[in-house]
Length: 138
Image (cartoon, rainbow, N blue to C red):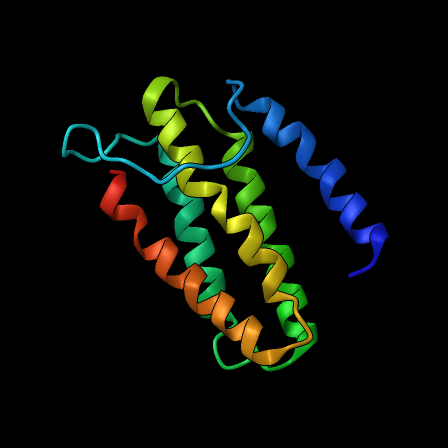
């Protein structure tokens, strides 16, 4: 991955992280339930997760091609950034959402790997992670 792309993504992400209130954008912790219940998420977040799941379905069968994986990553990151941009959640639910979302960033990087098995493993992990959204949020 070129330094230009890394810098572009970093600069592009900054306003989205700043748009979301709070000062806990560091290392993510594991997601916890709200006393055994799911957290209430804003509709835009739930829609963004559904968009990311649809993107993965759209690219099924095409992920052995590096160019397709790059295109998929761009679409996934756009949907991901949209979640941050439209973040209206506050308090503990907001904190738990960040704990859920932040691990995806590392998976996005691996999706574009030149190593097909590493990329496929990241795609599989991302599918599972997105499926787990309903476990923690409603």
